[in-house]
Length: 147
Image 1 (spheres, helix red, strand yellow):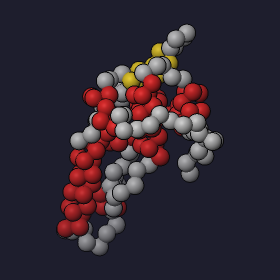
Image 2 (tube, helix red, strand yellow):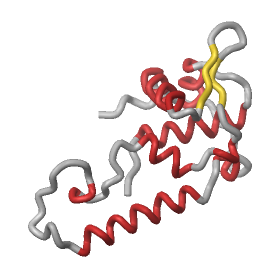
Image 3 (spheres, one colour):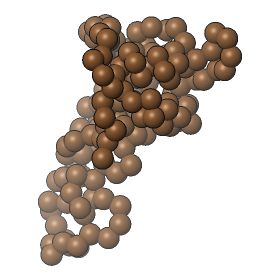
Image 4 (tube, rainbow, N blue to C red):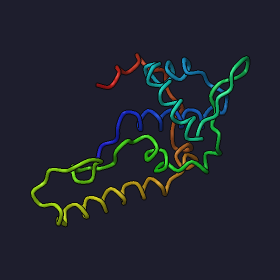
């Protein structure tokens, strides 16, 4: 299973915010994490709508975690960021063109595998991964936008 860049970047943003506890700006996150500013803005907006991040404007404002790191389950973040967790066509939204449907044991096996992956992530919180993660080192250059 492969996660989208949005999930990867969201987790990086949350780890950094969990490490600093100081309000961060979109610009600062972009520079520190080596991500494009447009990516950071989209992800921060999504995480804000999901109630994971808090934003405040003005002097001393910025982005912070809305919840304690121990309350942020990694699986919940991935579910929030991934538009479609279907690892095979028949598990994705929309019609599937498969000669084995509607009766295919592979479909249920893949669904169980996907659920096991997310369940494994749900067994970890942001607080669980913070102690073993070094602070971000300065990035060389922002990653290019996803295609």
